[in-house]
Image (cartoon, rainbow, N blue to C red; front, side, top):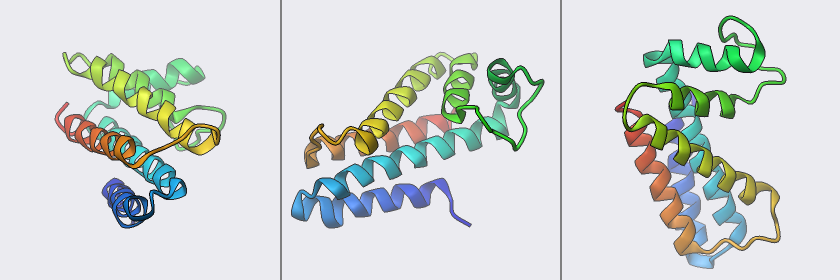
Length: 140
């Protein structure tokens, strides 16, 4: 079974094995995407384990259903995760939620905005930022 950390390892491999050597934008964009999905899946995992009430409330607000289910048709789980993070009564959670959604926007740019340029140094800093945010999420 794959874990969120497997996505982070792949991101670092894409960045360091190919992105750095060739400054290849395809690998750099893929590194951003994989790091974001490591962040997303770790956040979702932590929310479901430690903050189920906030997760269910965020899901219910978006769907009108009482609690989260396996069916996510028509629901942005990225938004559910952001909203659940924002609703945790912890001084750091609102900041984490804001950073999380900023990284989601970066992933969208990497995947869909081909006219935007991605360079190694910036991507390396963003991947490190996502890794740091993962560590913070594990402690909320």
